[in-house]
Image (cartoon, rainbow, N blue to C red; front, side):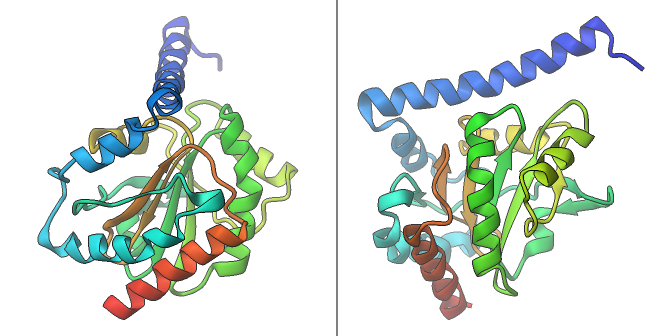
Length: 229
């Protein structure tokens, strides 16, 4: 069955909006170096913020020295933010939410096959999960392709992604929800989330997640979260 012209235009508009969002963020960072940082600091965590997330801000301060080198662009939380209970599905089609990962530190990554930087960093995210995945930490990558549900799975198989569990939201609502709390500027978007579902840090754009810098950042976040539990 083919899509109608109106459906095709709708998909194109949604994709264009995400690309433009990323472009605006990139230009702002390039010209002033403050757009992403200002947005993160200025957001006082109104939606979803609670006293329960204050420890995550304290953890972010401790972890901040490790946001350097290949992961220097990670902006550490300055105010409490409860990450929305994002809804998506797994490889079997079963519904999942971010709350299903409570008790673990999570590196949440939104990606799409049409996003070149997303595709480029996927092998590194897979390597990170292989090296650090445990009962205390998981890389959760959520695909937001809105067309051809089989394409992301086929691409992951083609490039040899083996350790990452498959999650997807073909409505791309997860992107809009993070955008609503000031945390999605374009693609890819990645958040470091504590075991209670609170933001530790966010990065707009790709990073080398298999690097020594990234491994040290993750180790510090996981260790800090366990100490605070």
